[in-house]
Length: 161
Image 1 (tube, rainbow, N blue to C red):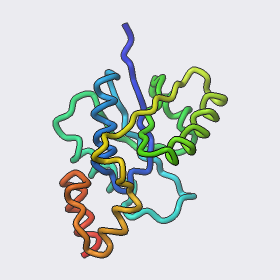
Image 2 (cartoon, rainbow, N blue to C red):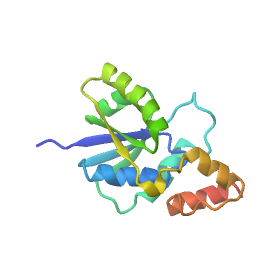
Image 3 (cartoon, one colour):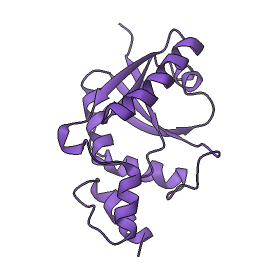
Image 4 (cartoon, rainbow, N blue to C red):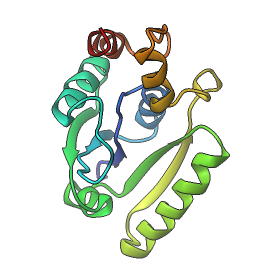
């Protein structure tokens, strides 16, 4: 029986407890989950570099088996295929997420019919949390420690010191 490998792509700037929840849910379904940090030079300036995000996510995932963190550029489906993954995992919080993610999933299916997309809802406790909102709150000195893993909370505090 072959190993079930999934890729969980995103910018993860920063990685939240909602992202962590999706990883944990995916680990219950797949043998291996690869958290893939998108290195997209066309996106607005990120708060954390790709290297910082990888390190922070790895620290946040310590103690979990079957998960690894890496970065990628280019088409997500081509990256997944290069790793032998047959599934993309996408986290959803609200309907607005679904609308955008569905468009991407349909295009990915057109580009690579052999790569499937699975949508996983984050738990209700994390449904209102987005990376953008977290950055706004943290930039004004607001408390975000209960919304992100401890390594991320420390890094946000340091960035906005």
